[in-house]
Length: 476
Image (cartoon, rainbow, N blue to C red; front, side, top):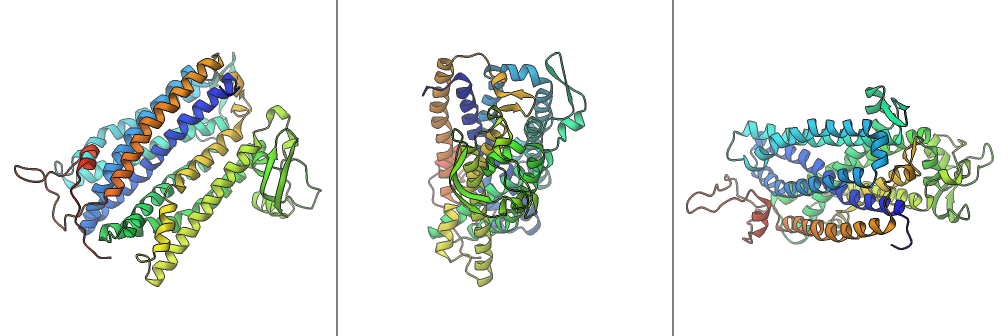
């Protein structure tokens, strides 16, 4: 396929499947916590719009949760089919970490998910709220184990190599490896921010369409508070993560910055805003630079030294052409998120948060920005780790199974077709649910579906099929 080797096709296949998978858990993590907040606000205030928003986003959560589970199963099988030598070499570390996720997060979610989805009118409010909290906690625990496993591959610690295999020596060092705290915070905040942008875009879209209900206003307001607070926080966490990466993965930083030659001592390193790193010519063409800013950002000094690509052998260099631009895509989207939060604060102060159509359009356009930023950041992290699958310990070329290019081409093509059909349909279904908007029961309990009564849908499919127009109450 396109002259690619089996190794390159295996990497593309795993990258393709994880690109789909990471979207759904990220939204699930954010929505689970958002649902817990909504239900808590409903129980405390008994304001109907909190309950209406809970039922609205619960359907979307259920679909995302299902697609996340299905897409995740495929990746676990790939460790055995496409990366069998990696599994043999490092499975004694990655296997238990993934097993801990199942034993803690999956069991916790499985125990309470049914009550959360179907128990609103069947169990007491306290038990239902507890179930929602437990599902939210389960998503966070799941993220913790996955990030720990991946972070160990980035900054491996606590192991020895005996008879050609990784043998765990210190599980605390393995789990809490040097990059783990920064990557866990970065990913967790990214999930909350991506969810807030999706919720805010939904509210802005409905306001543009004239659906000016209290529930719609509330979800826009809550999302914008989250963007205002969390987007700048993410920038701070990203800076700390960058300092950690500079210490433990200098080649990745060199690829991100796109520098090839050392700057003269004492002059500082410029920040290359834009350019085109050329791996063959060993230069970054058309570079647009800001003097000393690279040193200031990464060393917090105007004269700090940074690693450059020529510090590393050619076979040890990540692909700077890709990493350079994926990182800048992530940062650019992050700056737009900060702008969105600041704009919302200014409009709120002026009393125009629910009337500015220009702001609504910007919020709608920013709806997918959180997901795109997560993907760009993930590409930066994973491609920047190359050519290592376990950084400094095992090369990616030594981890791949012995398949030929034709086999990998066929399976990759099948993955592309199936994923776009299945998850494309799922995404379209989620957008359809969002397009319906939250239903308003005007302060009454949702109908339970007794004889002769309208039934309140609890399954996502039945909810989307109902074309009955919702009634809305205007208010702030």
